[in-house]
Length: 119
Image: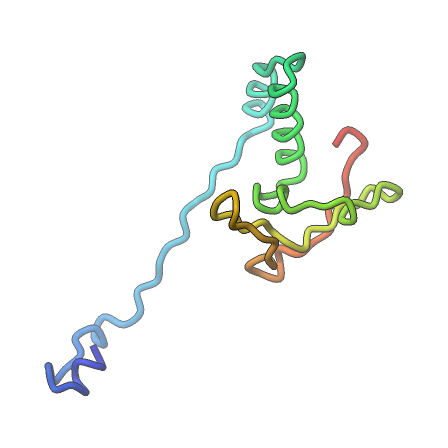
């Protein structure tokens, strides 16, 4: 609207009256332990793909990682001796030929996660 004043289209900017409108953050709902156990119990672990799904869901739930963070993990990010996982990148994926590792959006996303024996 300020540009419209400069161009002579209008003489006032009515949006100045309103001021900044803050967007409310949407509440993110997480699975409870019971919901997670219910989903995990439905997976047939003898099937290769179902077992892979089980491992993926278990890993994501136990670490609280985002999918982009989990898919960006490389061997050098895991310290097996101390059981610490370093999160310092995420996977940007557009299509099969256009993907790359990028820095997380915030500094708070760079972190170390201590893994338990089961995870």
